[in-house]
Amino acid sequence: RVRPPRPAPPGAAPPISAVLFDRDGTLIEDVPYNGDPGRVRPMPGARAAVEAVRGRGLCLGVVSNQSGVARGLLTRERVAAVRRRVEELLGPFGVWAVCPHGPDEGCGCRKPAPGLVYAACAELGVDPARTAVVGDIGADLAAARAAGARGVLVPTPVTRPEEVAAAEDCAPDLLTAVRRLLDPEDAPLGPEDTEGPPAQEPPRHRPAQGPAGGAP
Image 1 (cartoon, rainbow, N blue to C red):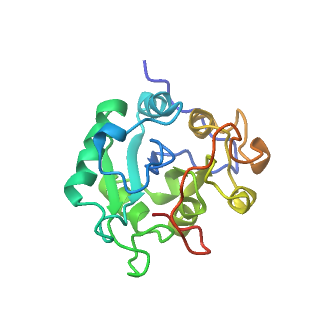
Image 2: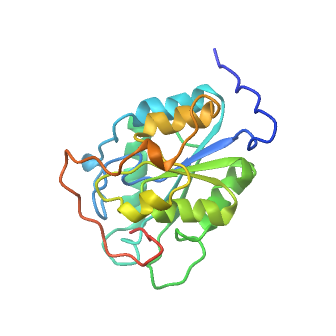
Image 3: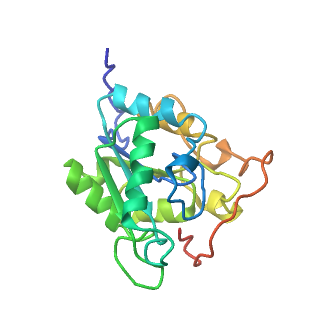
């Protein structure tokens, strides 16, 4: 049975209609410029998180920078192959909004610009103001903010301390982030919910990025 969302208290943000996930470092492990489906590994709690969203009948999507295409490290076909593997492991998503451009091309879709969020919301037929974007770096939250959506940070070993400090909404793991989005009155999100990236793993490689917290 699908449990309907609880009514929001007076003055609260409107209930969400869609959740958009970053791909690398959020839904799956961050393997730089990965075009090999065999290297796709879901992040802890990813399957449970997306199933929780589906269980509420909300829209699901992915918004992902893939500059490896512009850099000549990936092909669109390889990006599509990874997408298919993600859906084999986590189930289908209503939309995949992917930016293949490089950081110097000045496109409006590459996070931290809002284009991917706008495109995903348009495809799903939802208002950005009733959409949440979940990601692991500052560019994900910046794109959400620029689009008028809600951004939630789930830090990993590559998340910078200043990105954690600047995040309005922060959760220690993906499933907790989604549960709080679905029932925001249960436990408000905030930077105090996490002390930063987990310490038990060595940091993964993170490509160079600009001061806005850009992504690959």
